[in-house]
Length: 464
Image 1 (cartoon, rainbow, N blue to C red):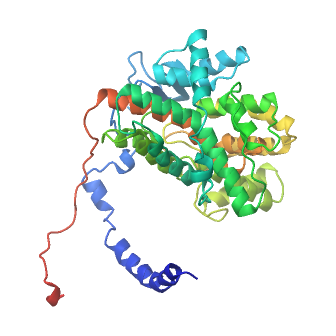
Image 2: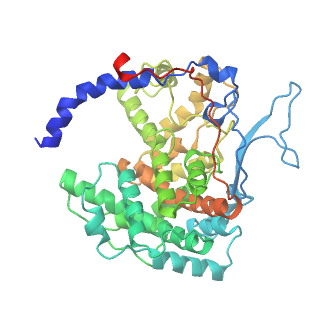
């Protein structure tokens, strides 16, 4: 045992006692939130987000709107739910997906161009954009050996954030926040994220699980989705369906409005004027959380727990398990059915709707039709059970996390890479929002917090 470990062992009981004091000193009377009309989580009592900014990058619609974008109200003055709509730069996500799938093309690079530059690329510009991404799909000399292979993290998101912060030291102009330099940095990070994530995982498996260390170099002619699979697998092989579905997942996760936690983090930290690497590292820290990017891991673990604990896959037995989840008697006893419901969407999440169309095809290829049928059954039964047991202000439907974890597992993507795959996609949205923040604001984002402590007098140390 090292000296530090001995010190830690001796001091931890004292720290644990102090932690009780720290917690008790920071608990705020819940009634104050109502008294001062505080929007906890920047949402009102009905779950509607507080308007904190404007964006031209994407739009999320969950309630009926008139031609001017105003909510349509029913006779009781309530908003009318509708099937979810997601638009990238004003274009419906369904139309975008249909466009590249009809041409039998990969779509992530095209959608990245759209999000960054506000318009769909011509064939010539898309070719140039792909060439830029391919050229940037490399890391500094010895970066893998000197950075990634030293002190590998057990969590790939931490390894990814550390690598991003370290890339600051390899940049000749790290603090230049001119749009041209920030765009260059963002394009490099978009290209480098698959390498940083997969290499971190390979090193982790080598040092912690004693697997063979496999570091493939990227393939210039391949798409982002193809490169992820080729870099991740020892033999570098994948099927066309696997690559196309992973590409689709990257497209659906690339952007989701300015108000999601990690993108809002991008805006907040960018508004301080700091460098791109610090901003992206902060956003990665947000995405890592199980309430955000880590949610699909919870879905897969919940699903495995269900299979291990239900007597059969009949409707009655599945309903019984779902009731136990809501009653905090099953799985992690959180009272949640993971993958069901969304902060904004009500009747449906368009990303989940699109993904579901292709999940069954992959399930057939992977001989997991039984699992697909169970997922579909949960999607059908869960809203009914939640409606019976919870007071809900809007509809409940499967969100994108419900199927994305299942897709990842069928693609043989290890659970440690679930959230990094999300990050590989969302770095595009973060990049677009960082540029938007730098182009428009000029003011640091600083919401107000009301202090509710009582005024106290200072007591000299000798009198305490």
